[in-house]
Each structure stands twice: as structure tokens, then as C-alpha cells.
Amino acid sequence: MVLRMQGTHPIMRYRMARLAAALILSLGAVTFPAPDRAAAAMTVQRFGGADRYATAAAVSAAHFAPGVPAVYIATGAGYPDALAGGPAAALAGAPILLVTRWSIPSPIAAELNRLKPGRIVVLGGGNVISDNVARALDGYDTGGGVQRIGGADRYATAAAVSRATFAPGTATVYVATGSAFPDALVGGVAAARASAPVLLTKRDGLPAATEAEIKRLAPVRIVILGGTAVVNEAVGARLRTLVPSGGVSRLAGADRYATGVAVSRASFASAPVLFVATGTAFPDALVAVPAAARAGGALLLVPGTWVPPAVRDEAVRLKPGGLTLLGGRHVLNDRVTFDLRVALGDLPPLPACSYQDVLTPYRAYADWQRTLVDTILMVPSSYAPGDLVDSGSAGLNGGYALRSLVAADLRAMASAAQSAGRPIQVASAYRSYSTQKATFDHWVAVGGYEQALRTSARPGHSEHQLGTTFDFTSRGGRPPWEYSDWAATPAGGWMAANAWRYGFVMSYPRNSFDRVCYDYEPWHYRYVGRSVAAEVRHSGLTLREWLWLNGSGG
Image (cartoon, rainbow, N blue to C red):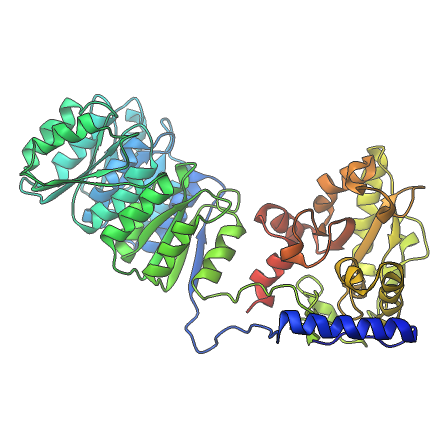
């Protein structure tokens, strides 16, 4: 730990030295984590298209080669038929693709052309996939034709899929609610692994079509997926009459995520790849079962914006060598990726807040979008961009330096704020190493060294030295730190809602000290470009975490 004390009053140097000693004693030796280069890097994939159809096509393209024996087709507007079809498609070595009731979306048509399947199986009746679509599909198979498997309702369709696929004497049958998708989805991967069907039931009564199919199959084991809130004990009791004594078991947890963990634990000792899907929406996950089965992978569900501890622990137990996320960042954000990669040892943990002087790995001017500077990582004292221009060139108040590459978007943002009646001005921009030293020393003099560490960067550790970072305030207003919360002002609120559209990210958001190591600063924005700012905005991560995930952490 290096605490800089040059250039301060002797009494202040004495007090700072005492504080430094206290910090070292309280924190102990702090080391900067480095990735284990000896370990094999995990393969991380994300399949997320413009919509559910593009996502389905992308998943298929990554897991199935041309010349597949079959393709199963389900509606993208609902989940039951695809859930029942998952194990059947897996057994046939076939992907599931999605269509609308009235058309074949262009990504699906392109994927069918690539696959050249021997035959096509349409899941569901004409009320979910029209006869016109079924006839159009006939142009994509290589001679096996199009077969429709459907029933009067979702329960009868699931039974019909099972009847067309599984012979009597099948050892195991999985039974899940037909009223929600999560349990049948994770159960579908387990069923595919066991060469078993998934049948659907109502919460409080076993449908006749389901019971008749179980009797035909004559299994020795039935696995109920989900707790009694989704498949109650009346159904359990009826199922026990259909198999030998002790042949019915239940895999369930406190919620859909814990149920997924229970299914995974009962089905996998380990997995070469872990598929992750959201448990809050079905479209992107519908096609997971045959893809996961083909890869030998397990499937777990998350809420979409975080990883429940039980899911994280199960991911670690599985020891996967690959991680596959189903859906774009609006479905599974980067918080999910970040936390799972850290848990699985593929990404070093974000360092805890401490004070060291380690040169940041990306410190060239060309690295401006991914340079991470924080309380540990720093740029050299000699870092001084050579393309600095005055802030007046961006249509704002002059007297502040910034990199020329920022000017166009800064001008656009200032103009938009002005048009919205929320004009802004620059309160601070580029700072050299010596200027940041003077700034930090000022805040030490104002509030003491410990408080300064929370509100100001030590020289070399400030984003302002990059020339792409600004403190903004309201035009004609006070310095932003003199407001109780600048984000609560008209200009500050506009910036919080819109700055990302112009490439600017708030570096130190509210309630994030443990992740960014500085107090909330609603006026401090760093320019990273429009595309990166949009990714950060929708990632669920702070800028420090996003930079760590995207290079600075390994």
C-alpha cells in the first residue's frame, strides 16, 4: 500500500502517516489478484438474436450440422408444445425451431435451408401453427415429409408427442405442470438425459390424456417436477397408483430456481457445459433442451439480473468447462455472466477497495474505452493525452481540456440537454497528474485523509487524467458537490436518464461504494462511446465491473 504524503503541511504529514499505519494494520497485506493462466480458459457463449426466432436459429446453428435427421417446429408464442417436444427432439438428434402461427420467420427459413433436415415434425394443432405454415415447411425437408403431432390441448399434445416417440417399457416419466414453463424446461434436460418423456398435468388433477399415456408406457418410476404449489398431492396420489410402490419421487425447491438446482443435482454429477436461461420468460429458453442434450450439458435458471446463491453453488459443483447463456443482455444481463464466471474461477474476483499503485493493463491512449483506473490500478504520472482541446469547442463553457474524440458527442449531449430545458456546463475535465495531486491534497485539507480517499482519487488513479471524464453541473449553478444530490436537479436528472445515449456513463452510482470504492457522485461521467455506454447501461454492472469483465480482470 502506498499513501502519498508529499507537499503537505508537516502536521498533516504526521497525521496521514499515523492513518497509513492504522490502515495497513487493519487491512493487512493487500495483493492484486491475477488470473490463473495455468487453468484452461472457460468457453463462454451467448446466443441472443433480435428476437426469439433469431435466437432459436443461432442456438441451432451452433449445435447442429447440416443433414440432421429431423427438425422439430413449435410455436414461438407459447411454451407447452416446445417443452413436451424437447426430449423427443433430443432423442431424434434434432433441434427445435420456432415459427409464428401464420409464417416462417426469415432467420428460421435460413436455418432450415442450412440444416436440410430429413423430416420435419410440427408440434401442436392448426390453432397454434396453421396448415399454410405446415405446407410451406414441406419445402425444406429432404424427403421425409412433414408430420404434425397435436392434441385437443397442451396435455393431449404432450401425450401425443410421447406416444410418437417412446415405446412401452420406458423406465421413467417426468411430470410437470402445464401452467408454467420453468419446471418442465429444466426437467426436459434431465428427461432427455434419461431418454424419458415429459408429460404435463394440471395442478389439482391428472388429465385423462396424461394418465392414459403413463399407463401405455408402464414406467417403473415417475418424477414429479416442482412443489405441491404447482403439482399438488392429489395428483401425486393418483400417480402412485400407476407405478410400483415407491416409484414416485418429487424434485422441488422453494422456487423455480431452487427446483432447477434440485433437478440438476439429481441428474448430473458434473457437466462439460452449463446452459443458463431466464426463469422469468420462456422464448429464448424453449430451444435449450435438444441443444443442451447434444452438448451433454446441464441447465439452470436465473432471474435474469442476478444469480441466486443456490444456483451459483450448483454451477460450481458441476465444474463446467463452458458457459452458454440463452438470450441477449435484455434477458440475461452481464451481472449474471460476471457472477458466474467469478464463481467458476474463470474471472478473478473484483478486487476489494484498497490502496495500491499498480499500472493498469490498458494504459495507451488508444485504450481509452477500456482503461480501468481505480484505487488500485493507475496510469503513469507521465500520461498526458496529446489531442486535448478546449471545452468551448463542444459548445460548452470554455477553460477545460478534453480529448478531441469526445467533442462531437459532448456537443450533441449539451445541445439535447439545452433543448430539453436542462442546460449543463462543465465543472471539471482533464487533470494532469500534478493537478490531481493538488486536488487530492485540497480535499485532504478540507475533510481529512480518510474522507478524501472516499471522495477524491489519488494522483494517477483519477479517471480525469484520461481526458475523457467530466464533472458536470447545472448551467449557472453551484459546483455539483454542493447540492445535496445533483441528480435530483432538473439537469442532473436529465443526465442520469440520458447521458448514456451520447456515450457517457456515471462512474460512481448510488449505493455502490463496495464495487467502485468511491462515494456516490451523480456529476461524474466518463465518456466511453455510445455503443459501450449502451452495453454498460443494460449490463447491471458498474463501469468498474464492466471494464473488469471485459478485459481488465483477465
